[in-house]
Image (cartoon, rainbow, N blue to C red; front, side):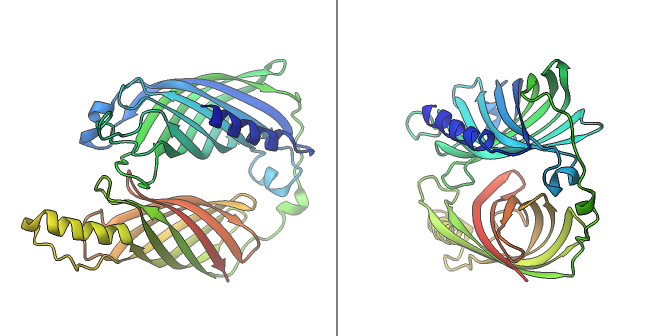
Length: 362
């Protein structure tokens, strides 16, 4: 807990310590809801979690072009506490970065956040072997929220209420890792330290033409993951993608491409299954490689963009996972040609890998 409070404090200093025209605000919300079991072997982990989320915000007012392009969003950091009220799951803490996007005269807020989590009661072979959701103490944390928000209701104080979806998972860096999804109802207060609502549209920047010709991308993603066998160990993976993208406007680009998956934990898993279950008649030399075709969408914010892809395996000799896969993540563009990426590759609700990547766009 102390470590996460320290990380949150350091992040808040970064957010609030900048000397610019953005203003400061804070949101505090309490929530209560239900665990969403996405497999039949997770029903014993059901419960009614509750907790809180604190968001430290920078409110944009038009200093940069992307502020007005996205209707003056907020950006900042968050701290989350979630008690699952379940003896096997325990509690989770999370810290990370967020964006708040606004609609309908700034009364509807869409919250998107990503960070790291800490589980107090992960899987343990002897003491907690019922927890199939968290195989490790440290997790990734993703949150999506949609809420009604009224700012400056009483002087600098406002209110918000809505729904929140949370996800904690380690991306199969350690097994078991089914992950846990929760659907929550939240209510809270917000406080605007500046009491300022002035926002200026940069009309010169809005007129810029962002449409581009087709670009060619090569991305290498890597990391470590573990097979479905508990204790089988971490193995490196290498996912190489080649795709084209077409940017149509300020915000959007479409993608289409192919990729090769060299996932060594699958190679080890094939050998294990062929020896442990001879009745399967599985050849231990079955090719572990996979090839996929995918289509995707990229949303450009500033130097950061959000990415979502859906793919289909056209070559998959070892048929263990679903034939359809998906990926969600974000990119940081160092310049128009070089970017880094962080993403989660899954098969529906089943995470396969946390991917760290480096890409070239030509």
